[in-house]
Length: 183
Image (cartoon, rainbow, N blue to C red):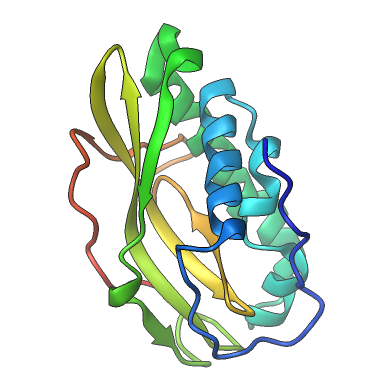
């Protein structure tokens, strides 16, 4: 794991467009990869959208409970699914790079997707890794911004059919980022 500065979730949102080329983003994605190879979602807690920010963003009855039970709960399931997908050699898989199509980022206005506060969103980022000598990749369904930093908000899927983890668009090679859109 690489130390990641704590998120500034208690401060108000800004319209600063995040970059996927910062030290913080690389550290967050390294932590996300550590979570995937070990199966322990808590290792990527600093890469995940902050609870304090989520309570400001969501215009729903109990955003903290939703974050705990649904949002981070789904993240745990997705990390476990990705770990299982890598199989017995998970600990030997190495992260090569992260493709985040920041040029396709869209500002999501307040009032859309049950939100009280706007944010930047980008869908379909890719974790590119090497396992058993072969380059492969899996997707990150949705990154959203808080104060100029990208955070994972949906790892395997934005919408899901049941209470099971999802591996987003696994591919041989780097895969294709996208599609854009979403909340």
